[in-house]
Length: 276
Image (tube, rainbow, N blue to C red; front, top):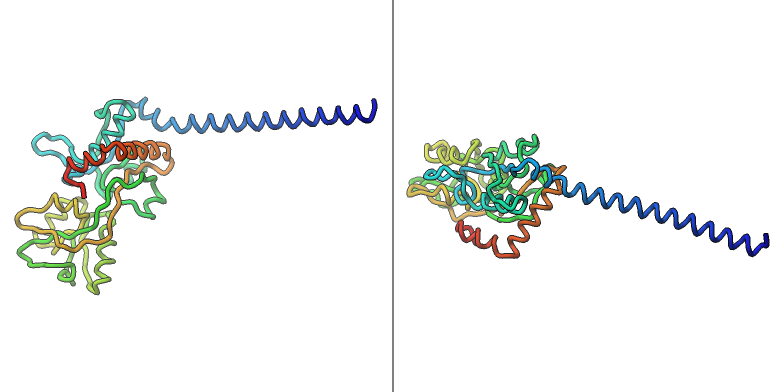
């Protein structure tokens, strides 16, 4: 065989080998992309197969998630958000199972797999983001203080040396501690499992104030109490899923984005008197 023919043969063989390697690489890429697409739908398909979306919600936070004493139904802004997710998945907002949670129980219930998502005034912070996936914020609310009118407390500084009721497992305690430190005062804390117990502690004199996100406090104001003008540490609420279920979190996040874009989010905020 002539030298030129050998060179041509070698070039053809090299080209065929290179093409084969490229085709194999593309095949692997296609397989990976196909697998990724398949995985991305598994979380939603699992919920569809079950026939119900399992959601952790509050039932003691007026406007956000509360049990209507007249109807016995759970209502609120966050309840409507969860229903919107159910409607997107099933085409039916009622294919949903609500489980009441507190600041202390919502994380463990999500970890155990008993719930698909938490929509329960769940404040987003760096520590929690290490444990769970969060959607973009759907509401921002500063921490406030509820006091009895008869105690004549006018500001956070008037609570120096006094006890403040806060919910267990909430970020409120840290926020109030930092604000108190800035004001140069010292406060004590009493933690309670539920918001209603925090309010009861205030009314019974076991606490001089009840600290929580301001919009939540508005649901507990009556003719004997008032919210102080002080507010601090704005809290951003997000919907949470398990850390290993990012697909569901991304799906929910897209639902929220669509609601914001369409104006549905604003309509719900107006409906529940939460529009700033």
